[in-house]
Length: 214
Image 1 (cartoon, rainbow, N blue to C red):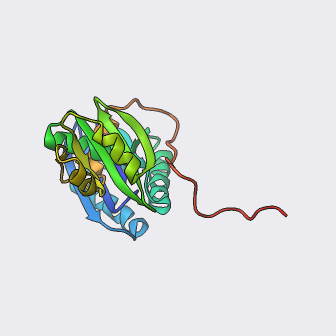
Image 2: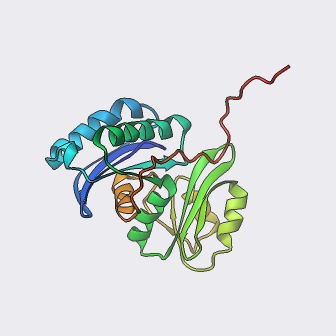
C-alpha cells in the first residue's frame, strides 16, 4: 500500500510517503508557525523523492488533533482537498496515538502515555496499550494522578513528559515530543478505509465566542 501522510497539528510540520511500511521519503521540521506555507512544498518534495505520482497513491492520512486550532485545520484542509482531487480514502489519526506508537516502538513498553502541554495548566493525554484511554484534556495534576496509578513500566511521549517523569521515575522517557507523519502513516495503513472524511478532534471549546443576544 502506497500511503501519503501529513501532520501540522502541533509544534512540527511533517510529511511521509510509505510503501507497505517502508519509508520512501520523509520530511520533519519543528515549527510553531508557518505550517500552511510549508506543507505543500514538503509534500511535493517527498513525492518527487519517492518517484511517485499522486495517482499512484492508495491511501492518504492526516492527524485530526488534538492540537492548535489553526494547525489542525491546515493539515485537514489540505488532506481533504487531495482526497477529493484524487478520489483516494483519507484516514484520520490522533496526534497522541501517533506519538504513543512511536514511543512504544522506541522503548518496547506495552503501555504508553502521550501527554502534551495544552497550556493554561492543562495537558492532552492519551494512554495506549494495556491501560488504554481515549484522548482527553485534563489539568496537569489530574493527569499526573492518573499516571501515578499505573504500576507497570510505561513509556512517556510529548512535551509534558519530562514533568511527569520527575514525579513518576519508573516511567520510561522516549525521545518523542511531536507527532511524526511516518507514524501517522503506519497507523493509518492498518485502519479500516472509509468514504467519510475525518473531522478535527477538538477537546475544548474555541476561545472566540459569538456575542450574546440582548
